[in-house]
Image (cartoon, rainbow, N blue to C red):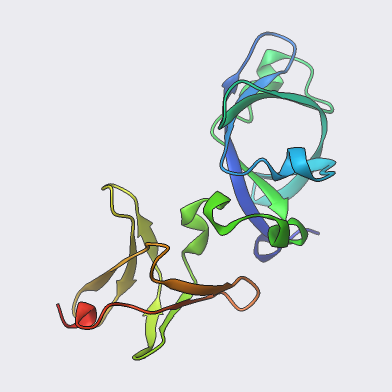
Length: 172
């Protein structure tokens, strides 16, 4: 059985494409093209299920068309509409951190090199140009910039992001 903590998201099914079960999808990582990835994983009725890849082709730098084994018509393809595409974490070491969907970091602990543990990221706010990690506090929430210049290391196994934040940022 595949468990959620053993996978990470790389994309999403956008819509069916044509009548033969092909689907349009978006992706944040093309790891499936660089490595031999035989299947994608989808969450279906609460279970993570692998589907073998029949074929795919790129439409752009972040979109493509996908045909999965066993998906033979438009109705079957429509059942995948909006689903997140996952891969096993065994491929994670070959993926650049910039290729990972930012929502993946919800649940990670944020540790500053000076202040120590800041808290656990509850969500990633991508509504503005400056992406922010949202960390709930007793009274409110902290909004911490998710800029690469602050991130020193990411430990995917322990779900920890090590940062060096500018002095005074946490006092705002």
